[in-house]
Structures are given as C-alpha cells and as structure tokens.
Image 1: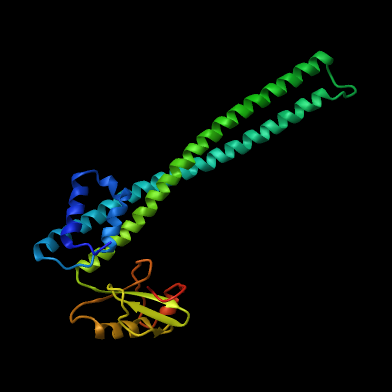
Image 2: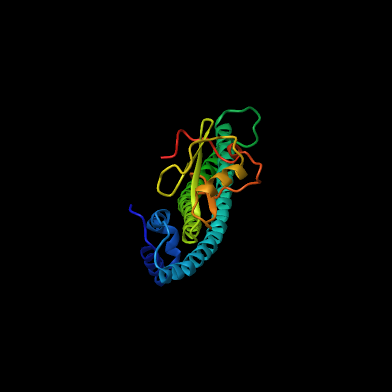
Length: 254
C-alpha cells in the first residue's frame, strides 16, 4: 500500500465517526492506513487530523475496556463449564460402577433379584441423564469458546490499532521516527523511508549515545522517537544498553 496522506486518513476517520465507532476494532483497513501514514499535508488538514486521532484513540481505549470485561466474564464461564463437565463425568462414572455392581451376583446382598434389577435400571437411567446434561453443557461450552475467540481477536486488533494510532500521532507532530532492531551483536536504525539512518551500531550502545547520534542526523528541531519492530515506543534511562530493550531478530530490518 502506498503512503497514506493526511487528507485520506482524515476522510477515513470521518467515515467511521459518521458510522458505528464500534467498527474501529473490525477495521483492518484503518490499521493499514495508519501504518503507512507519513505525516505532511496542509496546515488545515493537519489541524483536523490532530483532533481526530486523539478522539479515535480515546474511543478505542473505551471499547477495549468493555472487551476486556467481556473476555474476563467469558473466561470465567469457560472455567465453570469445564468444571461442570468434569463433575458430571465423575458422577456418571460412579453411577456406571453402581449399575455394574448391581448386575454382578453378590452373596448376602440385601434385596432379591427384582430389587437388584430395579437398582441397576435406576443407576443406568441416572447415567443417561448425566450424559445428556453433560452434552448440553459441552454445547454451551463450544458456544462460549467461539464467542471468546471472537472477543480475543477483537482485543488483539484493538491493541494493534492503539499502537498504529500512537505512531500516526508521532508522525503528525513531525517526529523523527527511527525503527531499531537487533541482529546478533549489531543494532540497526531504519528511517520511515526504509533506509538506514546510521551505520549498524554495537548492540551495547546506550540509549543516550544512540539518541544523540540520531539527533545529529535528524532535521533541526525535530524530536527523535525510537520504536521497535513491533511499533512499540522505546524509552529508557540514558545509560541503558539498547540490547536490553529489544528482542533479537533474525536479520537486519528490511
């Protein structure tokens, strides 16, 4: 996808505002546009977008709180259903054992053949009742797990959207965003154009030293923002080695 302009992103957010904001967590297109947004644009369009992005982020945060609550309730229901199924299976096992015992000839067992048969039939009937109930609970468990997977997927998309919105806000401010990644003993620094902004650095370089080196190549007056390959903002104390902040990847950032 080509880079998204300020006007295009603003128009997309306007459409979502006029529609159902709950669609935000179902809009993969929005995430894609946010990730390809590179800032720029006219002052008027930038002013509009600067208001839309925080509003969208606030909406997403609110929806995610609701989704987190629903996921928590569904996980509790899942555990309860699993416990119920285990309990029913245990009861059915006890009743099956009782039915089998009644069918075996045992000396001095109280009651005659008819009473033994009645107890065996009663135990068998109870087993069938327990199995039917267990089947019903299993069906309900499948429904809960299906709904749970849907909510978990929505929550994942929501987290991705939060990161993408934060990234877009940084670009709108004109930050010098640099993606940093580890490969072996080397640290790679890649600009938004996909090119290296610095030669590969030693993985042990400190946060302060790397930031200072990047400030020397960044446009005047523009703040440097470091992000991981997962679009997570990277911040730390000045003397923190960069290798302790990142997970090693398979190769240079491409």
